[in-house]
Amino acid sequence: MSKRKIISIAGDLSSGKTTVTKLMQETLGYEIYRNGEYFRKLAAEKGMSVTEFNVYVKEHPEIDRQIEQSAKEYAAEHENLIIDARLGWYAVPESFKIYLRVDINEAAKRAFGDPNRKKTENFATVEEQKQDMIKRFNLENERYFNLYGVHKEDMANYDFVLDTTKLTPEEVNGKIIEAYNKWLEE
Image (cartoon, helix red, strand yellow):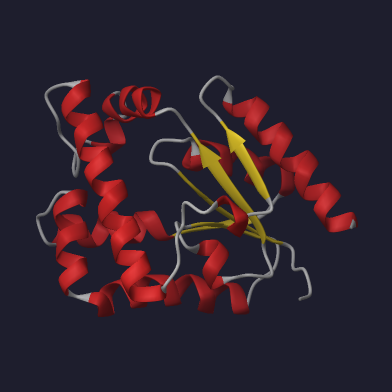
């Protein structure tokens, strides 16, 4: 399979994907395509939380296929691209495939403190946020396996896996860029 100048980034909820893709964009000058923004927009349009919309999409697989297909179609016509999508690695297998991990307790703290999430994830406590994140993770895994026969949490799907729990976004960006450049040279 030939390599393309496309990076697909997936990862645990609140692992820092959005923040690091912005830094990667500054470093590389690549464009960003985000499936998650599209998903959140559709959830808000339906007046649902992200978790409620995950349940809804499970009953309406055509929405999920449409979302994943959009990344594949966009990548078919673009280079110098960062795809921020849970199944970006699956949609664009010739990309440099990254998975960011994070401890669930740290992830819940990050998500709870993120004002951009309040429209679709508004919880009273960090523990409520954490329980919702666990539920979403499990819903997504089940949905992706049923629709596509894949496990996004199988680290064998990725070229580079990094735990972001104790790293700054700048450190994560540096490690990704270093690994990406090595991958391009191989």
